Length: 155
Image (tube, rainbow, N blue to C red; front, top):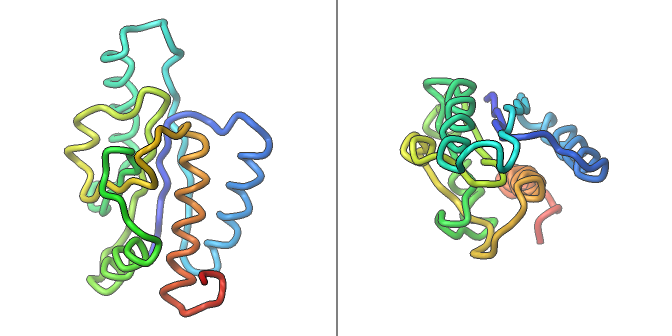
């Protein structure tokens, strides 16, 4: 099953890029995985609403039409790692052809992206930088597959 991470902006810091590369490498044992980065809008150059709309356009263009979209957002549903693994496992059992994981930029995501999302999940009620959110999401997807397979990574 293909899984695509569609994220606003690039991972700027080397340690974020290295962490992402490590989890992407691990995930490829279980799934076909791809990361797609869309351009972010420089802060302050445009009104926030316009910047969100433009970033939303880019996210939605790179989202496969038939994909089950999971948005990572602090206003989403708080899940345990086991519950998140259960969500992924249900999608697998339903025969979903692909999954898209969505991460917004500094300003969050446009309302159209929220409406398109099939699930909105949260890792914390705290605000988290979008680069860190990507790493947390990758780790949780990896953890989900180890839980589904009964491997010893998750304790």
